[in-house]
Length: 193
Figure 1 (tube, rainbow, N blue to C red):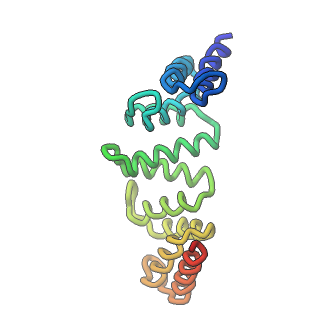
Figure 2: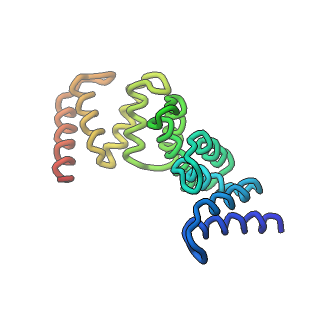
Figure 3: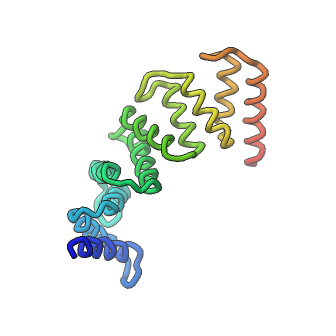
């Protein structure tokens, strides 16, 4: 019965957040998510993190957004929701003023590329490896992720691989491969026009 009570708070929070059966009230929604979280409903942590990050129904508070997102990551086994949480934390630690942290950005980027296939995540992770942000510089490992991003037609990955082969950085200089990747970059950009 206690678990049902906890989920009731969670579902009421959802109803208030989307205006089903009631008017949208993000403040009430947030209060019910807090109750559900206090009662151990893990999904509530994810919603609370989003509320604090966006300032929906509550004053924006990035520290609380991080707290609840990390609490969710620690307690969840839902792959799709974890991918969203990793992505959110990567974003905060990469771009949010006052919260930049290269080691944590690298940690969540690594979790992302280990969880799913996404060309932008592969490219971003390759850039961290290439630039040594949050980790040691590892050009050979970066090349692997540039190549993965390139398989999914990430245009900047094509360009970067062209540069690496053109300059022979950590790999044998190869003008044929450089030309191939530069042409691929041009073709990908022409296709997007």
